[in-house]
Amino acid sequence: MKVTPWEVEGKINYDRLIKEFGTKPLTEKLLKRLEDIVGELHPLLKRGIFFSHRDFDWILDEYKKGNRFYLYTGRGPSGHTHLGHLIPWILTKWLQDKFDAELWFQLTDDEKFLFSQKLELEEANKYAYENALDVIALGFDPDKTFIFTDIDYAGELYPQAVKVAKKITFSTAKAVFGFKNESNVGQIFYTSMQAVPAFLPSVKKGKNIPCLIPLAIDQDPHFRVARDVLPKLGYYKPAILHSKFLPGLGEEGKMSASQPQTCIFTTDKPDEVKKKIWNAFTGGGGSLKEQREKGGKPDICPIYQYYYYLFEEDDEKVKEIYTSCKSGARTCGECKKELIKRINSFLEKHQEKREKARKHLGEFVLKD
Ligand code: SF4
Image: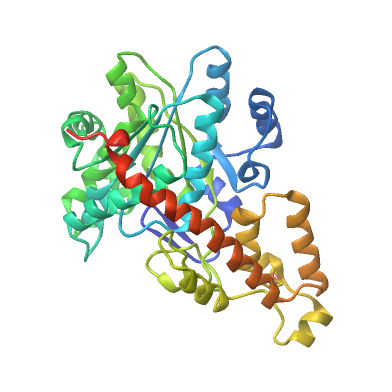
């Protein structure tokens, strides 16, 4: 297993990640506290897709005292958005609604340029605004949502980033991110840019405001560094909620844009979705006869995971998919067919909202 902000490979052991990253499990008790405040739990929380945290208990304590938090999340714009990217954003939208919180959304075009062999800066910047359409399409509140790219908002971000950078030694950056002599110096500096939205609203409003960051756990190393530095600059450590990765459609590993055939993009056409799901790995038997007799293996099946993560909200129905797969009553063919229908119906609506969002970009985007 390899999990870094730039690479996720192998079979992910989430319990081991909690230990290795030094985070805390998101316990039933903590979720119950959240439920008591907002009245319900999102399926992504109930189903353990968000499974780990840093200081989420503290964020709730502060909220109870009347000290409200804002949300921060983001995206590295190396290409079009895929379904896996939506997971932290969907929970972020739910949190915005429940807590009436601002969202600061960072598009790290500089990062994707610095860490990619092929991507030009202009291309990363172009993808950033394409990705922003997906964010807007999820229905975030334009009065409370601020989207920016590092390049186009550098005038605001850079003066704060240098304050962070001055507190991070090269040996820390090397230990956390594994930089080598041949790493470019932009890469070494970059984490300072990712730290800034974790305190920028505090700078702008002239008071310390708690920050909550929902993200996929591969991004945690940046905030391990930020949480060490921010108190030295007089700001709170940001709290974090970590999600698991939506699996790719192959045998193992997360959905990754670098393997487009195992990945559903929000811009995919119905035929592309059909082809990708149809060719996906499953936990089914070698033949229909074998599957009917021995049943399937939903635990290793990405098709099951898609229902579980995003495409079946009803807990009873998701259980039914699991048990009917295990018993052999459900066949992979019908299971895939149904999933194709659900994904395409979601994408049809999403793509419509995405196109409408082009006219509203200005209401969300911050530029220098
Ligand atoms: Fe996967 Fe569905 Fe086949 Fe079960 S029936 S192995 S969940 S595709």
